[in-house]
Image 1 (tube, protein in one colour):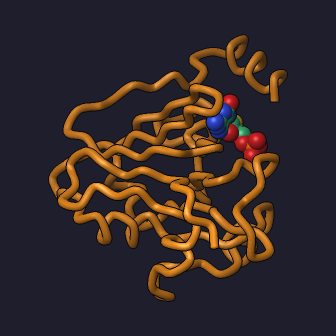
Image 2 (cartoon, rainbow, N blue to C red):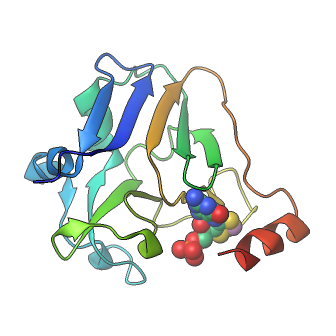
Length: 159
Ligand SMILES: Nc1nc2c(c(=O)[nH]1)N[C@H]1C(S)=C(S)[C@@H](COP(=O)(O)O)O[C@H]1N2
Ligand SMILES: [Mo]
């Protein structure tokens, strides 16, 4: 049993939640993606649908932004929720264990049909790795995704 909190969800939600790996694994089968490679062959592991999590915590249907935060490397994205609600998922499991750090674990936010880097608000850079905190907000929140080629190259160089 792994009782450590790996994901905190708060903001404009009725039931702010601290979730463990077991909490995620025990979510209903209808919100699980057992094998994400079926959706995107470049990715492995198991995921939960963002829509399922939002329902679980009672996210306000009127709050338009989602903040996706990694305190591990201080990387943050804040993006409009509407287009993501039914698309995005959170990869949290690989071979029955917590998704390892080298795969972006413990939780990796993923938009399968993302735009390329910096092409759009919802781009590859918004696929935040090492996620530990999700916030539903009325206003756009803190976002430190790379802004230009140089910053972007630097970031990739560090990975
Ligand atoms: N925590 C964290 N997440 C991150 C980044 C990062 O530096 N830190 N880089 C982003 C950027 S700019 C891109 S393009 C993708 C790259 O994902 P990949 O390593 O799976 O190719 O991760 C995104 N998620
Ligand atoms: Mo990126």
